Length: 213
Image 1: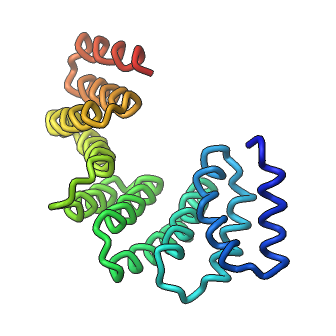
Image 2: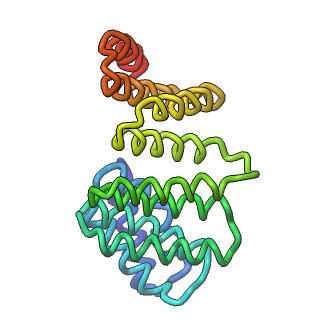
């Protein structure tokens, strides 16, 4: 954020100088920054520009740009656009044969389904995302997908199943050393315990989660 003005100058220069490769790589790299700092309109403008310049490419870079754009489209409520962007990214990743990246694109499509209120469709996407990781030791993505499936299970009233899924997330969070993920899994577990009517244990688990946060 401190160097935001310099970043803007660099992007403007790359665009004016027709340094397309630099512009594409810089824009793809900045996706998490624009997302985390809520620069949605600015980020989307540059991502739209980069997508125009990379039209027709079937590369990792094009897929990264589509995923970055898809997130910002979701943030603005443009779910049809976000789904189209994530679907194109998924197609590229499937062509390139990258299971972890395929899993990520499937998870993103599930997130769009949740935004639309279709939890059943979201769970289907997320289970496909988990299946794509079979045989691959990507515990970061696995933990994220398991957590999402747990949320879906809670929404359909299967709170015992949700708690079992969150237990797997907790184990992976400890393995990764991720306090934030552990806290999130515990808070989700507390919500599932409320669904089961066990308010005392829910309160106890939630207090632990709050302490971790």
